[in-house]
Image (cartoon, rainbow, N blue to C red; front, side, top):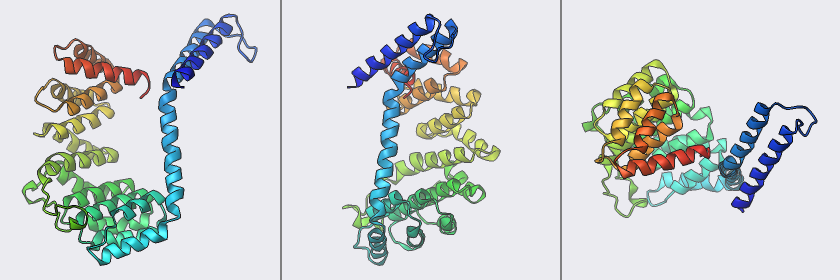
Length: 325
């Protein structure tokens, strides 16, 4: 079916081109050769982008359908969250997610209470995400209080939610401290209340979470703030010992068109075989998508690299970029 659609779009583009060369459009107006060529290219590009647009359209439809579906279950999910708050034996993480999908402001009071009182940090973190998804500013005081949560996963999610509410002054200190790993030796990832979720309540993945994911989450939120002091913090993170954090700092600065700072860091990541290939491939794709003059020179270097992984992922990134993906 996709190949048929591609052929159909290509034929349409060719037909437009031929008619334009004859000197007429469908509206009967004359068209220059340059206009005809541009129109043909637009039709061809539309064919390549059809898959991407269809994917986005399907995602929008699916999100709308999910919202309609879970809107019917709001009361039941609110009750489930209340039960989870009252008892450690009741799992309510799925109910919280469903309330986020429903986007019903009626859920804000119980979620605001939950984020401050429940004993399970994982669920408190999920509640912060749900309050952000619902988007009711009534949640702001609870999110501000959650910035003092003992679990740093909750802190960074609460701060990210506050950024979504444009409460930049409230969120910035927490995001800065996490991005720069201030007092990291005192950070806590609290699994004590997760017995109702995990079979291993003593699970310890905190080293990777602390060193990789929490600072990277903070960087993304700082990028959304996008003021001078936030950008300065992001620049400092270009020197982080962790490649995952350096990549996110470089990626954000590249989006802000600060190629002087971003490109050298990303290039070093790409050329370092000791860094996991997923991070290196992400850096390649970021440079390909940026597509500036300096980026094009780097892309050419990557295509001629002696490292087959770099060549492979560069070609793949170029192919995706050409198709608008």
